[in-house]
Image (cartoon, rainbow, N blue to C red; front, side, top):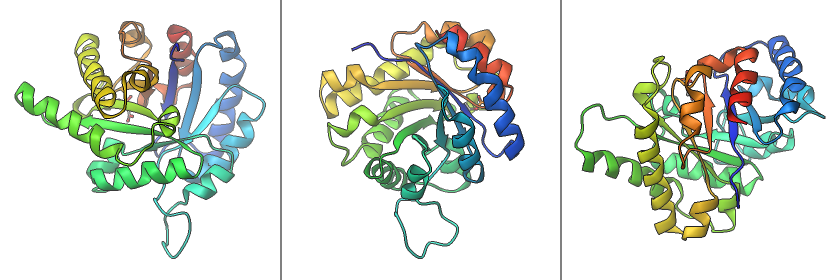
Amino acid sequence: MARQPIVMANWKMNKLPEDARTYIESVANAITAYPSVEPILAGQDVLLQSMVEAAKGTAVEIGAENVYWKEEGAYTGETSPKVVADLGVQYVIIGHSERRHYFRETDEMVNLKALAALRNGLKPIIAIDEQIQTVSNNEHMHWIVNQVIEALKGVTPEQMTDVVLAFEPTQAIGSGTAMSADMAQKDLYLIRETVSDMFNPEIAEDLRILYGGSVKPENVYEIMRQHDIDGVLVGNSALDPDNFIELVKLTH
Ligand code: PEP
C-alpha cells in the first residue's frame, strides 16, 4: 500500500480565531490541485471549534496539539480526547518535544495519551525526539528505539493503521536549520525497523512517519525524496498560509 504523504502545520500557541478562519479559507482552494497530499492543521484547543467549522467541506483536516489521557472527571484545566473527537477533530499531536521539555511529559504519559486518543477515535501523531547533542551512535539509536517502544505499548496491530509517528530532533525545531535529509532518513528507517520488530513488516511498511524540524519550502523537496519520510510536521514556516500551500505543492 502506498503511503499517502502528510503536510501538517503545528500552529502552537499562535493565531487568533479570526486568523484561523482566514488561513483555512486561503489554503482550502489552492490545495485542491494537490489531492495526493493529506493537509492537516493543528491548533490550540480554544481554536479547534472554529477550525473545524472553517474546514468543513474542504480537504483540510484538523488536529489538536495535546489531549489528556482520561475522557472525563475532576481534572481541572485538562482537555478530554472524547470532547476533542466530538468536535470533529481527526488528529492529535502527542508528546511534542515542547510538551516533553516544558511540561515534563514522560514516555509513560505519552503512551497513556496515545492510547486515550485511539480509544476515542482520534489519530495520534506521536512525536519522537532526539535530545542528546553529542552521543555515541549506540546511545542515539537506543534513545529513539526506546521512545518508540514506550509510546506504542499496548497499541493493537489493528490500531496501528490510525497511528502516525513524527521524528523531530530537538536541536532542529525552531532553529531554522533542518537535519540533513540523509541523516533524517537513517533515523526514520530505524523507527520503521523498530515498529517492524514490535508488530510485523507489513504494519511497519504501511506506517506513516513524518520528519519535523525547520522544514520550509526551500528544503521540503529534498526531505520528501527520502524513502522512509512520508510527510512533514512544520512549525514556524507553516504559520504563513502561502508557505503551507507551497509545502503541499512541493510534497505532491
Ligand atoms: C515543531 O515544533 O513541530 C516544528 C517542527 O517546528 P519548526 O518547523 O518551527 O522547527
